[in-house]
Amino acid sequence: MPYNKETGFTLFELLVSIAIMVIIVTIALPHFNNLMAQREANNVKLTIQNHNAFARAQATIYHSNIVICPSIDFKLCQPNNWNSGLIIFIDSNKNRQVDANEKILLQDKLNLKYGDLSWRGTLHIPSLTFQASSGLPNGSNGSFYYCSKSTLQPIRAVLSRMGHIRFENPATC
Image 1 (tube, rainbow, N blue to C red):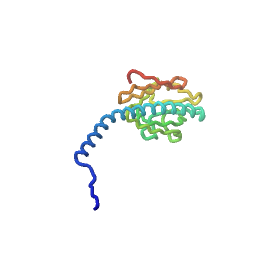
Image 2: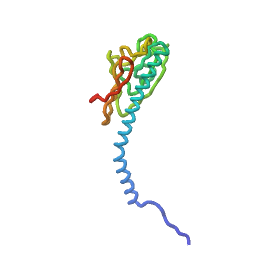
Image 3: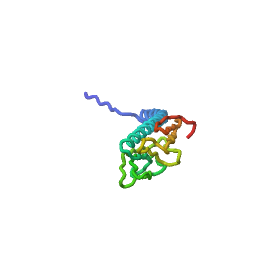
Image 4: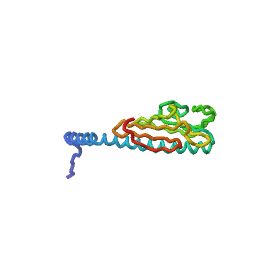
């Protein structure tokens, strides 16, 4: 005689399973957001260090001014839009803007979601320039600030006159 047992969930079992899943997600989601915010903050630190070193090296290689500036469309500099991304280009005519004959060396799409990135330079110029003669950021020393939207401490990346980066944790942004 064939054995015919129906398999499946009862309504009660399904409701208990969903309740357990909701509890787990409720507990895990804030920790996941903090993890992603920490990861973004670490990536911002690495990005700032790497792009700084890249721009310094390119200024020495090309014997031209190299500019790092914020950009949304990755074709032109747009002041104070560091969260979207940045470009690094050869600035032949020293106007700190991408012109038709100037080569873009690097485009980086940042898409920051858990914090805001800003540049505060000594001359209140919204970009950094590494000089052709020395590879140093003459007139462009200042700091990048990464201000997290979560509970993470702010990060300040200080660019010295010699072009070196050091990181600090200021009390506020």
